[in-house]
Image (cartoon, rainbow, N blue to C red; front, side, top):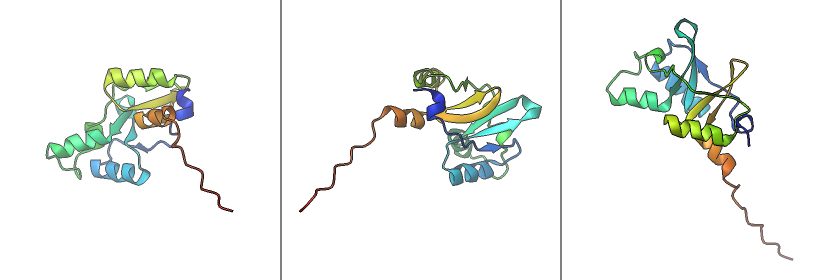
Length: 134
């Protein structure tokens, strides 16, 4: 199976000036664990994950004043839509992260997460047929 078949195509994109609280609220509302941070002044595309927000709060930083740009990973490993899920999983395991931004022709086309890969690799739950009575 390929990345483009597993990835989420609805990508939450935020700016570098969003506070961590704003980013967390948007991520929560969309039920996603990462946001693409677009910052043309700092090199383009980065990623802010739930772990980044958690680490900041754990350090006692104020999520109402901390800005996304200060917590964004900018040395991002990107996936291609044509990668296999094995290639994506290998990149995640090697880099120690759970999300990959998928770029198509240099633009974000989606995000693939460990959860997406597990969902594709795990067979659907078997639903027992309802008993038929005559």
